[in-house]
Length: 243
Image (tube, rainbow, N blue to C red):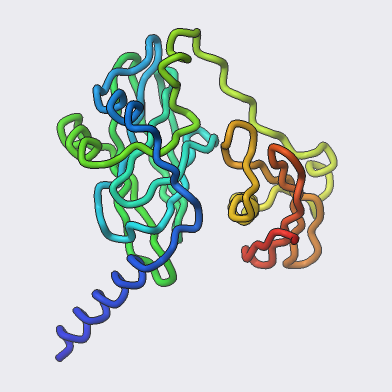
């Protein structure tokens, strides 16, 4: 009886994850880009990082990925994304119900593969990142579809020298000296809430949020979209964009 209850609970949790709509969209890349990416050739002078999900568990749940603090895209089941990077150490972060962080070292002209394993959580889907061998990674990517990746260089851009990485947006000077305005741990959730309202940064990447005010457990962010700035209010990590 106990085994049956455990099995039923597991199946119920899996069904919930399968039915959840993702918190963020994962637009598919054109078929020709997908085909080109599956040749596993890095742009000249750069390394190519593949991050893939080849499972059906939680297939509709969107998991946001950053590489070195920059938005790299959103994965769903049976998808992968790409980041074209200089050779060297890099930090990958996958955000769902939990935050999984992985450090890898890439090499110029070579692909590096990271598996984003989906984990069932209490309220949603989490994940675990793991670097895998080239053979395992190629197989996982081959059975998945490419999603739009802001850090992937287009075929045309590969003919141009690599552009320097954009500097991270720093908070206003007043934030450093005012304890009430020190950086928030909910910045990512504020950006997610804005993105759900259709806010996108330049080039379709994740918008950037800047903490404007904090009073008790309530935080107010200004989120810069490509065409406007919108306000997002967060209370204990629950964020909602102003209408």
